Image (cartoon, rainbow, N blue to C red; front, top):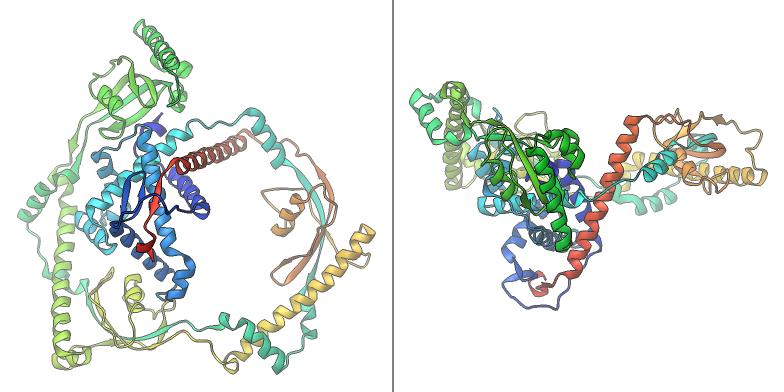
Length: 626
């Protein structure tokens, strides 16, 4: 039950739902005839999706694509990606999942959301503690307000809980597991041979006409990346380290103002026995479940061992551990369950507790009181944090003053001449091959620099080592070079491709002969493999051959076509296939069972999402999206 009622989702759950959502996005369209609200981009079952939310998500998506493609994103390319449709579908999907979770009676507390945020690595300082300033900065950089971000995290937790709840109904039968074990344990023995393109390279003739024709078809792959030539000022944090002095009074004040960062809430360890109910259960079914819970409760109060009875009667995965849920604090469990646990004394047994998941019997095993780390325990980390903040403030003030003076002077050059400040300069370079310099190679520096055009000045750029102000002195656009400039490289690629074509032709003729004679020609040098399984060591056999051979078992000894991998063509013959030798151990069976269980959970989730979509009333504002 821990995987169902805990509000902190595990990463595997998040991954599963992301995969499902991505698949669903591909196939689901959006209706346009149910409503007409000019203030929303969409309405899902009466819940509006605002244009502001859409625009923020759209801008973040565009920024993500820019980073992926080196800062260059032509308008036509954006249109071809269908970014607006992607973002709209994501927002609609998210709203459907949120509503679906609420229909299942699920809620997420504010405390659970806050704990989840504080656990995120991106918001932690170098000492691993949540940093409120960093939190605000990261959100601002991503055009998010704390309110909207926290609402989004809460929705994520809510949806993840729904995923866990549905997943609890997935099972793998012994027969299904046996069939998969037999399938994966199957073995084949192969003979194979190769035809290498290098043997045909001397036959490829390169002339101007053929090379020019081929280049016209492939020239986009020779396109040069954008390059920039920069002038910049740097303001390293290291230069201001000695300018900051943190006294004990400042440390004390920070400790008092951020006391919640050093506090650990009370935690309780409990066991439970669950008698599951589902939304569709009849009143009679629920009554029977409750009666069963009351019967077991009577056994416990009569001296029965709670852990043993949990193993015998609980319908939760925690039954194998005697119902033990481990330690948890307030806000991590659904409200009725939490209320019961935190009202018990150590060793005390609850009555029957009803939640959306069923009927629980709860035993409180242990209490860890709330604690707060003393000032002495955290003094060093607070001092380091205050020093870091102080250095950043001083360095930023220097950068801000310089930036204002650059604007007043009219250019970076005039500013440097007036103030005798050294301006650093680079030669032309491309974004993925920066000079060997800590500042320039910083991702934030590169992203800002290559987002600028020739003659543009950046804002103040924060990097890991300090601040920078960047000016693009010159820029070279991405261009397709003339053939003469890249002729040597093009000729080598031309020879490689044409020699592979010749090798493929020879291999296809060899395959035709082998099929006719049901064996390789006698003059062909071949190799024989050991027995191979579908997974595991291939013993030198190319993976593509193994995969193809298993895919066509029972369809003939030879493949339908030549397999080309790199500059080599492969042909193979299936010499023998057999059942495995029964060496699948318990650990492998268990791992396979978990994989199958995950697949079934994904199927349940996909079906649920599909049903939500079918039942939903969705309207989209097509005019606003144009």
